[in-house]
Image (cartoon, rainbow, N blue to C red; front, side, top):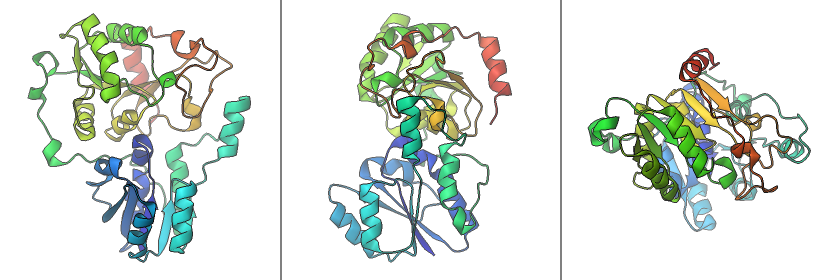
Length: 329
């Protein structure tokens, strides 16, 4: 059997599909697994040993479809479920299994705050998509594979961070999923251990302000300087990880890192919290305006941003350690 898996974006969502890839490959005899995503996410799938061949969307969907048609698939597993994947399925004309995005339930939850979301992680819902094939969850969590060329020793870190450090993934696609800079500084001051800041070029300015405020002995700013795989390596070697609701949080979960996840306009009830790893969730549960979006906004719709401005960041290190030890995996 030759199977094509479709998931075009984004970092976190693609990482969250890795249990489906592994379980299909290991539980179906002789299966040939192909994965299709956008070219910009090539590093997420290119080194996955459970994928036999990758296909990438560049600028032309018709060109991609012609390439896919030549493969003569037996089955398409659509884990994205949008207009583009529907077109691919229609034009390839083979059997397909399609992920249920439960958009109506999400709309009711976000728009009217109705508690209708199932208590099921999105990974388990992805796996339910392939249940008709007899494929079941193996319980091993997420995968992330770093190629040899990105395996760098920690001696490349500053001396202050070589023995042990905390990783803080301070990015987030939308502003309402990130702490304001003054609160990031407050959090880093409370952590009071060597911290490696992780993010892309859009996060570098904020990270530099944090470094200037707290000093080089505490803060090492890598935002915008590393590839995704190099950032993943720093997550893998971290003592623990602090993160907003972002793709790096899921990469950290793939490495089974203890994670403190910080939530603003989105909520864990949407099913995207750290999977199969010890974690502690920090969120403001007193507001009746959360969630205001399933993906976040560029600014608070009500203008007060209380979900992050009023967030309690008074974390006792001993209580935190005990909480992470007791957290369910």
